[in-house]
Image 1 (cartoon, rainbow, N blue to C red):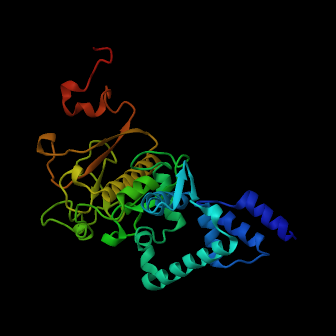
Image 2: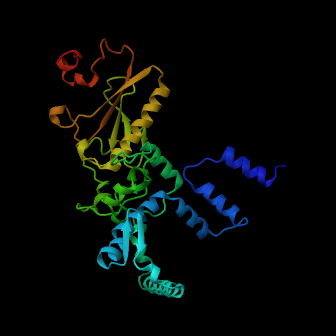
Image 3: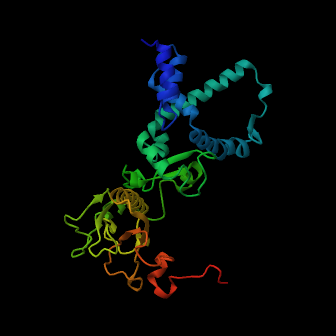
Amino acid sequence: MQTTHQLLSDFISKKMRMSHIYQPVMLMELLSNKGSASVEKIAKQILLHDASQVEYYSNITKQMPGKVLGKNHHLVAKEKNLYSLIGYSDLSESEVEQLISLCQSKLDKYIVKRGQRIWQHRTNALGYISGTIRYQVLKRAKYCCELCGISAKDKALEVDHIIPRSLGGVDDIENFQALCYTCNSMKGNKDDEDLRGVAESYKEREKGCLFCKPKDRIIAENKLSYAIYDAYPVTELHTLVIPKRHVAAYFDLYQPELNACNQLLQHLKDDIQKQDSSVTGFNIGINNGEDAGQTIFHCHIHLIPRRKDDVENPRGGVRGVIPEMQSYNLNKA
């Protein structure tokens, strides 16, 4: 039988699978406190390791109390990344203790007066997001900010609601994106556009639209999109990915709908290649507008499997939408 040390050592070194920092931090806190610790103590240790929180409150420090106490009231001075209390050396120990007590009293009264509202700016935006969803969102983003592109190695990433909870956003994976702290902070939970009707707009359908009522043709779906086989396939297993909301143009899709469609495209691509090992490539195309060949004015994305020698000369691919432009000479000036 394994000893406790052997059991824990084996788990930590061989079996621990991490989507975040939580497991090792919790074990360290338990080990450091004779085997037990409150939820609050463990949470505080996680907070100490959360670089995005440190970065967030570092910016708060510089933008708010640092400016007010420094430039406005000349009580603190800043040199590079270090703040100093002006005149601290003139204070006795008892004076320091009395001033700390005054600050604590001021803090206690403020918290009693305002309650949890003082943290509302954070709880509205963050809330609880499961480790599984965090992992999926960060994995989908390849561990880079989906706005500025910075890597998680260079700046901590946060999982953000595209449409904020406070404006009706839901906790579906299509409504999440990976943002670095800076981009997430600039985005905030407000926008010039009134987003309160967005959740309802996902239900928009148009009477008579073939793609608003797909009947029993659906072969795969998620919250915001679905897939069917093309009724007039270009190749075998030619598939359409379609947003559920009635929207004509690809460029009018919301970001969560783009996420949902991309998620289905990836799933279908893998599924098609499992079904048919002869598939070696794909054309992915959208007809956007009548002059581009669109005939059903409900956005749909074509996923067309390609096989070796299925046409005499595939070179140029989607350039063939204008036949005389499909072939091209790379050496042409």
